[in-house]
Length: 556
Image 1 (cartoon, rainbow, N blue to C red):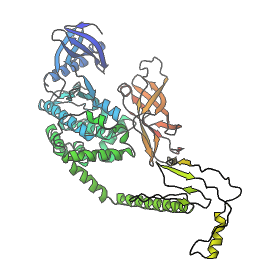
Image 2: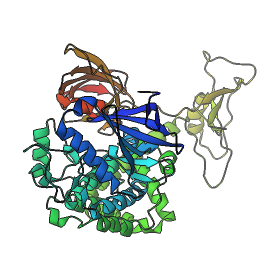
Image 3: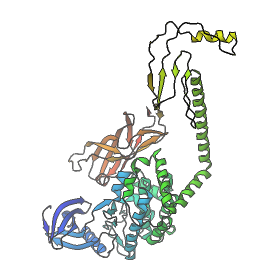
Image 4: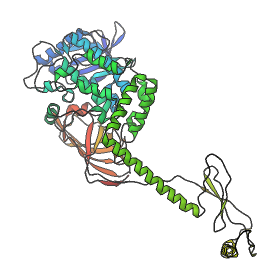
């Protein structure tokens, strides 16, 4: 298709492929602008239901003229093929940001959703429900404008159903419970999907996860959702509460419309309308949102709070909640006790060394020159530039020691042998200085025994052959999306390579993840959390999850 001309549109690049067709970038030769040309698969034009759905998407988009929605320009037919001419949106999807950073900060995400809800509110006023809101359908342009994409399965209120009975349309992970139960799409179902999308973006995890679609649907229908701020401590409590309200299992308890959802965000984060992608470049959120790194993110957000007074209330509420939890107080008390014991041990060690003349202490308020002579005659002087300067003993003549004033004869006799140099000791003719650098102590490795479920998030880095004729396993590689900590020790680094196999079927794929490189350089055995998946998961670059085998031991 590259180089072909469709009416006045000249195709110059292939942008992607979906379930119903291909998308190309083209140039409108009459108006001189770039457009996106969506072409229905030729084999689907012979099936009336798909052709009607394609035309319906064009009619839906024609009603939506809003800066936060990708608009349609034209619908054309040529040579038996059908094309939709749409606005060409050059930017980055939130799914791409999620894959790169693992989780996104509230300062970045809130303005994104303020704009997304503005576009959704416009669609709802036209009685159009999106039905497939998810990170990959939210695009941020280079100018910082959010575009709501892909109304391919949108539904107009009151229209006749086009889908088969008992067939679910949409992406299950972001689907409202009532849609799974077979009820019609509504404003409330889009509100839920928007909340589920926001949940994944700020926490880095889906609200519900399972190994099969059936179990996933059962979780959405029956399980209680985990608060986002428990998944990621850097999420403000106010934002976590807003997400939980949007995802309430009862549609009547959610926000009544997109504008009410938007106002709740603006009330909690005043002035959050302009999208600033620079926030992601100023903070390394990809590595700091796991384990000990989460502390630095919290500190970073607290610093921003000084510049943004509207965040102060949320931080204070989080601190109050933390210290009101008895379990947290017991943990703090235990840490303080450990610090006290460590101080006592280090102090006792330091005292023992001083008796041998090997430790030099200096007053922090008054710098003094201090020399101490050890039992061997070696002199230790004040450290210079983190070094100890040790001067060997001077040559000593064998003359009887004179008693010092105010000393008893008995005490003099005890000290006299100590001042005599030993015959077997070397007697240098000139004093020399030996410089011994003081090097920091190397932290000892920690022995780890894994006796609980530890998950590893992975992204596929090998491009598998999706069109292989014979169903056989393909060796593939995965990259670790987030670092993995266990009992305070880093056991798997971000970016570490895992290996496994994919067997591509016509509809489903078999997933096998075997091992990953540990932070200590040794391989760690893994097993796939989901043994099966759809071809769509592979093609869309969905995150995979593996579990470390229980009983794994190692030094980290």
